[in-house]
Amino acid sequence: MELEIKCTEQQHTAITSDFSPDTLLGIKAGPGSGKTRTIASRIAYLLSTQSQSGIRPDNLLVLSLTNRSVNDLRTRLRAVLGPMAAQIPVMTFHSFAGKVVGCKYTDWNILDDDDLRRLARLVDMGRSASSMAELRSHLRGARRSTSDVAVVARIMEMFGSTQVFTHDDVLEECSSLLHSPPKFVENYKVVFVDEFQDVYPAVMNLVLQISKGRHLTLAGDSDQSIYGFLGASFRQNWERLMERHPKPNIVHLNQSFRSTPEVLQFANAVLGHSTPIHHSVKPPCGLSPLRLSFTSPAEEREFIYDEVTRLVDISGGAIKPSDIAILSYTNREVDSVLNYFSERGRFGLCKLNSNPRWLQSPLSFLMQYVRVLVDPRVNFPLLCSLSTVPNIGEATLRKAVSLATEHDVPVFEYLHDSDYEKPKKLDMLPHYVKYIAKCRSELNQNDPDQILITLLKMGKELGFDKVLSADGFTKDQLLEYRLHFDTIYNTLQRAKAQKPLEHTVLSYFMENYNNDTLVTSNSIKTSNDNEVNFSTIHTAKGLEFPIVFILSGNNYRLNDTQRRVLYVGMTRASSLLYFNKLSNQFVDGLDHTSKPLFSTRAPNWTSESVSRLLTDLGRRPLTKVHQLASKLAHATL
Image (cartoon, rainbow, N blue to C red; front, side, top):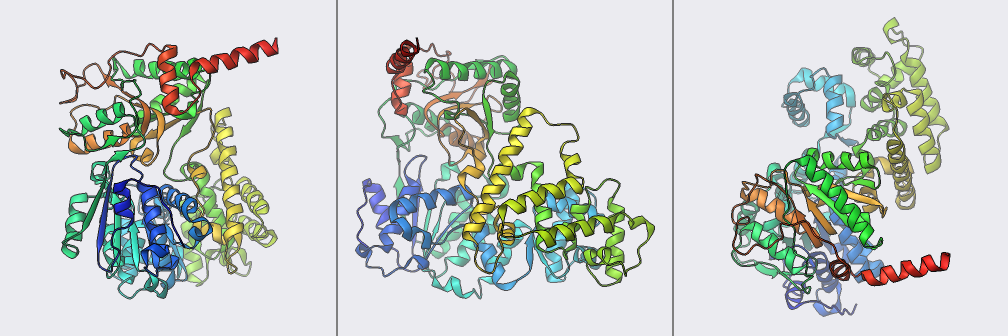
């Protein structure tokens, strides 16, 4: 394959760098520096005749931490390589770990935090944080036979022969299994790791294990390392790599194609760098970042709403609500503004999440029904499904488990089979179990329409609809749930198109509903132009927006980590940045300087200033918008 790539000199150096076994390339890539494009181009180069590598697509392994970055990489690879891109293994670390673990265990399951809370109640361990930590420890101990026998016995009653992991356990198990790797792993010759600055210890262990004897390309930016609370430490990870690769090849991508010079200079100042470390290639926009001061969060919320309204209106609709993001450190701060926007009512609202939005809602409970329909013999999802039936408590469910265990059969069989004698306390349960059996026998597990209808019917029969609508639905909630069901249905359709022969649509959906196999960017963020975006800075990482508001909460007395978080938030903005503060908040080295890099006055939007903003956005200038509106009005009259 011949290859022609348009790139900067720095990008070219990274793309064509040495890829011999046991070598390391580190790409330090600032925000908007074309990192994803450079990774995709390097992959294309390795597969081209120019590299003389003889490398095939299945010799490559591309890993990242989030579904979003995996989808971005796949999209960029398709643009460069066309159909060949589908042959390259690009996945999250958890997807890769699951693939390795699946080679050893044919029957295994991952429990998320909600599952752990339900399990803790069912095995009578309480609901506190210490109970959750203890339960995680018991799950690990159960696989090694090193845990409390009584607790392990209660857990095993829930899952039988199914191996149970938490998300971190899967990574740990994968690292262990790679000492004697599955056959497919032996094909890999070159490993890529994206977003290296966010790698935490369990992932780092996997990186070291999978890259042994192979070339490793890392891409990331230590200035965007913001996951220290998960244990991520760029310095410690780099030191571990240096023990194996004392002479790495380092390439700096320090040109930004995203943010204006004004935004980037301001963001660099927040980091405290005396000289800029990244430079914008864009011409100056002529609009300074804004450092506005408010007497209270309430005043700030009102200003933001009015300013969003003003930007949309004064641009004649050329600036859309979806161009705007409102970011902060915590969900509490973000939600306070989101709720205010909801009360005012003009705009749609999009709360960004790292995972599909429906999984952040009560509808995630539907996955218990999916698991029961695939295999009702596993006790845990069946018991979760029955837990919403009115007048069925956890004590009743534990009793059912105990009696089924005495007969050495799954709870489903014990309750479904009339030959087993049952105490009066369990009188209600057989009816619902037989209903589940009927749903399962009548369901075509390869038909997305039937699957979704069956899930809805089960929710109504098993009482989940009453849990969901206990306080009634608002109009916005109904719209949100409708969008969630659309996402679930579309994911089922993708499962139908992608599933291997040995799977049904339902079983393939069950295994991949929350990983990069089936999750798309639209599952995480809708494409509604009328929706203003709301997000924590951590969740917005990797995204960009023309206009960004950063809320005032905690924007003072900044430590190094907080400065990096703010830097990430500020560099989401391509054209216009509002970096708010309360009147008593100040940032050392930023406020009270002789040459401030920002304006402290609310903008007085004129035709000229709006035109400058629209020009930077590549949109129609304001005068043309007004001319078009005038012509349309005249034509209508």
